[in-house]
Image (cartoon, rainbow, N blue to C red):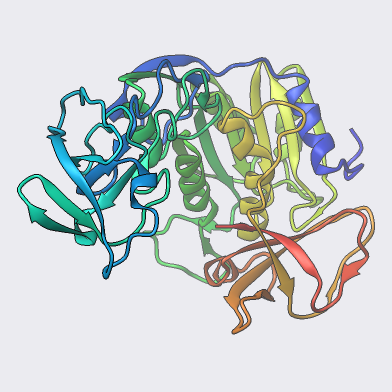
Length: 409
């Protein structure tokens, strides 16, 4: 394959997905074991939540029209004819001019359509209260099915479970969920200049950064990372290490050795691993152009640039969606906000640029993105940034004040 006959990000995703079966296995876990796991199946509600109209305040359940026109100087008087007990069915019914005392969370009696807070009532005698503020239908109550409707899809396959998701599953009576087994990801760094973080530096040597950033990204994405250490920039050594990682994982990430240097052997090693083999060498992005993608016997191999910024961005664009189960051709990274860039940024048509930015909010509420400038070898620029602004393929740069999509770290 010709070096740097580049693909777009979407073309690179498609190239990998077209050779990749649905290799995500599934397992059933309890609800309490499911946090941060990725759902393998849609979950549909088998009942309404709540299953009955219920009060959101301590007060009196009544007919709203019996309070119309009420005020402190001229209360509306109603008879208290019953009481709702917590956790028990309200038998009712409530007629005109009547009310039942009700606790927060209590079931609304038949015939009632509002709850008046205790604070807006006054006792006239043991059986009569005056309502000093009018109520509208629906005040201070939650309707049956207002939270979740029976038959509704509560959560969809591919969704990563958050604490609030565990809550809604508990609400609909789900105690076990089918989730994807974590994708096993092997991580290697290659380069004769690399040493481990515990070693003292010397001239010409730098500590391995990418093994640790990639480990964190894999874990954050829901995968199961394994480090295979620093491998010398040697064909035989790298080949042995990659073959070991392939046997033990479903995805292998190799950082370094993907550019055009005479001793950059990652592509040469990948070409020997099996079929279909190397799918692309180069994608139309900055940073991260000299990235490699391959599929070997239904397993994925990515050769990532050695520069830490490039490696992290390419991981997010290509590896993260696969780990999270998005193997379809339209898989993409979500951009949760738009922000106004604060200075002109040069780009080139036919290339997607990913600019590190720090975000701040102006007094008028506008969110602006300040470019964090620096070369892609500087990990500190990722630490200082809040996210990455996306400049599309079709742009020849952007001007200060232009709105850009931003993904957050």
